[in-house]
Image 1 (tube, rainbow, N blue to C red):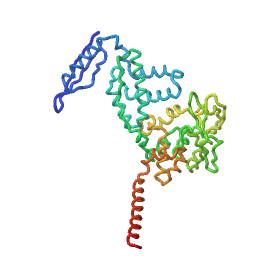
Image 2 (cartoon, rainbow, N blue to C red; image 1 turned 45 degrees about the vertical axis):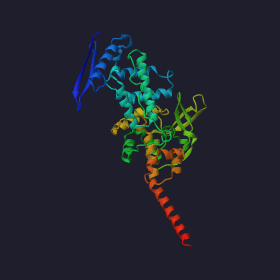
Image 3 (cartoon, rainbow, N blue to C red; image 1 turned 135 degrees about the horizontal axis):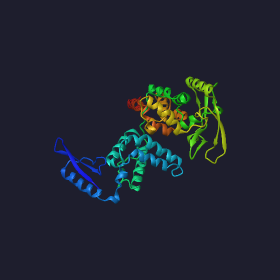
Image 4 (spheres, helix red, strand yellow; image 1 turned 180 degrees about the vertical axis):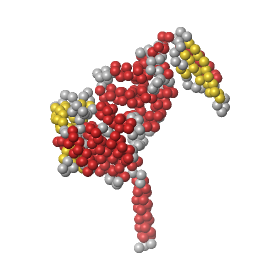
Length: 396
């Protein structure tokens, strides 16, 4: 085995920066993380030479496999029933939409812990810590599998740092609300078959599964009413279920939503779709769905995201990045808009089918004058108390 190890250095303000490079059997030139002292660089060389001279620990040919090829192979191997449908969908989303773009062009052996940590840090700036924990678990699974397949000697995704969060304040969320013109552009960029669905999401804030289950039985266009009483879910297969937390509600439709739904039904009609209720072995129920795919079947979340929503995002120069760019953003848009217009938290919770606590924790940022109003109330109260004390103090 032909092993070449060398280093390069370049000046910095005080001293030099050193980086070790190596090549095995004429393969790609790889490198280690840069260090700031010659002693550390020499130590890296010794450890690297010892590691590469232990062939039982490293399949160098396998290590040169592109990350994208390996990740896609694993996705095929992990299809249900190896992983549950829900878990597999999450793995597929993280790998296809996040990991492959992040490590594009790199082989397994070229990915270092610092690369993984940088990606984790970037994700922490985009989404919640809980979401990043799931993303990290998927990355760890891929890299650990590469070690088990003897393509790597060690996983670069171990001991990645996540900031410690005070659980008492973790519930406070920060939601980036998209501007109204961007929301309109996204809805207009949807394929014609799903444009009315987008308009309904923009105007009502309905959840994705609730949008997929809009049915003639629950829709009254003449009175402009929509009864949100069912959703389409995917758990080991598509089925109907009550909305989240069983919160059935009736919504008033806007003029634009009513017109969009009427036009959609004229063009595409409605389709009777029979699915199990609540679980895969549950009783069958039939609804005349307003929104179906091109084959007249109930819409699957992953199919809609890939064939419609992600295309709309790219048309608006946005990169799909999981939940932070999902259609759920239209729900955040509606909630923030209603709150800034002066609707109470309880009323917004009723519209969204959420709890008052969840709305107040999630959308506190949408009430920028809340603290000012509170200070004004307290100031007025203090002034009234002072006036009463002064009155009684003067013996009146």
